[in-house]
Length: 223
Image 1 (tube, rainbow, N blue to C red):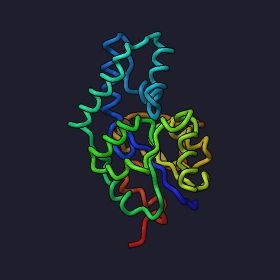
Image 2: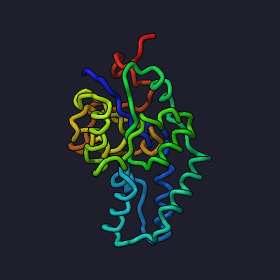
Image 3: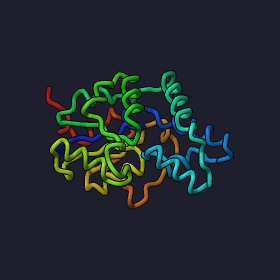
Image 4: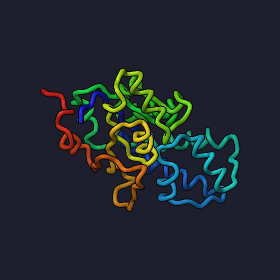
């Protein structure tokens, strides 16, 4: 598999944030009478933008959250990140030794993504390398964001490798005709049963970035 560009998802791949976000969202919605669990969050919300999540809640539960909910939720979430957010083990070593161009493609807002990366020592990825769902008409599972990355960096989509954790992210990569590896080492997936439907089946799967170059040694820069 010849690769010219590596595209990393952010939450649940570079940073171990999804478990924090999921637990907080479950708790916040419970206050409005909406009872969901972490499995529901994983199936319906992972890899999707905040407006899409809110539309799902409105559609399924008939709940219109108050206008102030978003700002309050984001503020509490970032406060939780300040005390509990961790970089994914071994990912910095991978980024520092990649032989190829790479970028980050996330459904998070630009402000959240930038601040989150800064918290874990990856702030240098928050500049021109960062692409967010706000830049395209349709977020994941549509291919728009990944195709924007490829176009902006002059890469053929078929030669872009996507690293994702969510089913919707995998669907987006497959819709973009890009090879995709699923990272299953985040706290939100470790020890949990998960399934991969036919439309979200990754090409490869790995549980630690310590194994990353075992999957394709050619991705590592020669010292």
